[in-house]
Image 1 (spheres, helix red, strand yellow):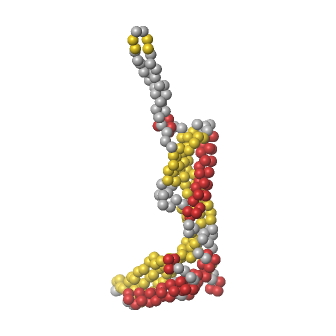
Image 2 (cartoon, one colour):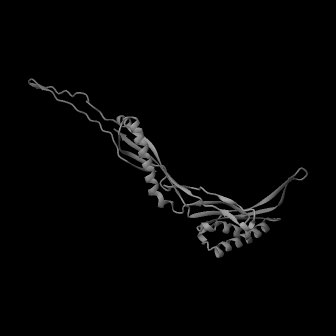
Image 3 (cartoon, rainbow, N blue to C red):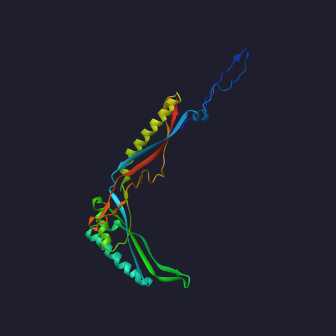
Length: 252
């Protein structure tokens, strides 16, 4: 959480010393005026400013997997391993995807159960699954890549998640928009209250300090055309980069 601000609060005590006759009789009057924390709390306005940018994505994360079944767990794993090796080779050699952009996210070999009233629950073969997350940056070729992966044996393809690879590049812009939004809200409130807006007391950004800018998926993979010759259509759309600021202002 990021926080900027200045502290207020002081107590001002004023008194007078009365001197008379042949001696001194010092009497302190009670405080003429006190500026305490309660006074400050009655003279502030707190608003939330929101900043958002709609940006064309520059990377997509694809979930591409292979599922195979066989009578034994060993055979299911062996068959699936051969398919995933073929798929990985295709991604690296034909599509030029680096090792760092291909990551295994799921692997499992599980029994496939069937049930009947006569025999109850029985194991009927095994199912092996292996899923890869693939980062790809040539967004114009995403549909063709998915088609090639399917031809190579991928039979478990998830949604395409579009994103900004380095959202920090837009952090300053989105913070400026959020601050401008907070200024406008606070000014409107001050005007409605027949007051004037003073300086900023505190600013708190709504994040944990590690991910100051939030990016969200705003696009999805289109369904494949009925005619396989048409290929899979994928539209990147736009993604949103956003942040929020809690801003406290003085009221005059």
